[in-house]
Length: 351
Image (cartoon, rainbow, N blue to C red; front, top):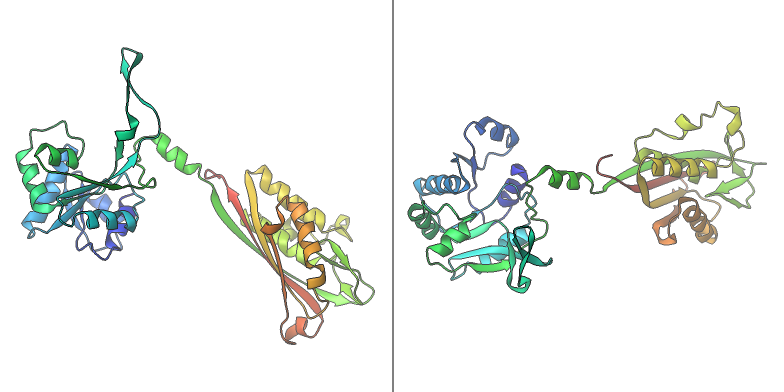
C-alpha cells in the first residue's frame, strides 16, 4: 500500500522529494518494500498520527525546508495525479487545500440507542488525503498545537490555528483501508483474465468444411479426428487458457474414439460450462481465420451469431475477422486453414 502511493507521488512532475514516515522497528520492512526505488527519505514516526507528521515535517525542515507539502495516509493507496493537480492548483495564493467528497447517506445523531437529530448532509463532506499546505505555516502549527490531541488530521490543526482551508474535489478511489472487511471487499472485485488459442487443420478433398459450427460448401474440407472445426478448436483453447485449464487435447484427447467425427460445438459448450461452474463469466471473444479460400465474409455474421448463441453472449461481444498470408506458407498455398482466438473472462477476486 505504501509503494502504490509512493509511486504516484514520484511519477508526478511537481513532486520534488518524498518522505515516508514509519513506526519504529519497521525500517527494514519499508526498505524491502521500496527495494527498487531510491528516491525517498525515511523518517521514524511517533506514537500518534500527529507526532508522526510532526517528525516528518521536522526532518524536512532540517533538510532545508520547502515551499509546499502534501501529507498523505498510506491507508489510501490508489492516488491519482488528478487529485495532486487539483490540490497544488488550489494553493495558488492559499495556505491549505484538502480533497473532500459529498455525503450521500442520511446522517443522524444517536441518543442512547434511539434516533436523535438529523444532520444536514448538504453541507457535510467526507475528508480525504493527501492534504496540501504552505510548509512553513504547517510546521509552525505543529510546533504550537502539540497539546491539541482531538485533531484527527492536519487540516483540523491548521484551522484551529486560525488558517483557512480550501476544499477541492476528492476521488472515490481514495478509499481508506482500515478493517479486514475493506480488504475482503477488494478481493471480491472481478479479475479480468485472458486466454489465447491457435489451431490449424489440413484441407483435403472428400471432407466437409465446418467453421464456427457452420457447414460451408467448398471443394475441400478440413481433416481431423473430430469435425476439424479449426475456428471452434482455437476458441476452446482460448477459453480453457483463460482459466488455466490446459487445452482441448487435455479434455478431449484425439486418441479417444468417442470424439471421432464429433461436433466441435460440444467442446466450446464444455469450456463455457467449465468457466461458469468455477465462478467465471465470458466477456468477449475475438477470432481471426487465416486462409486463402473460401471467402469468409459471406458467412461471417452467421458464424458470429452461432458462436454468440453457444457462449450466451450478445452479438457485439463476438468478433470474427479473416485474413490471408499473401500466398505464403501452407495457408497461402491453400493446404490448410489456421485460426487464432482470444477470450476475456471475469473471475471473482477470490478465485
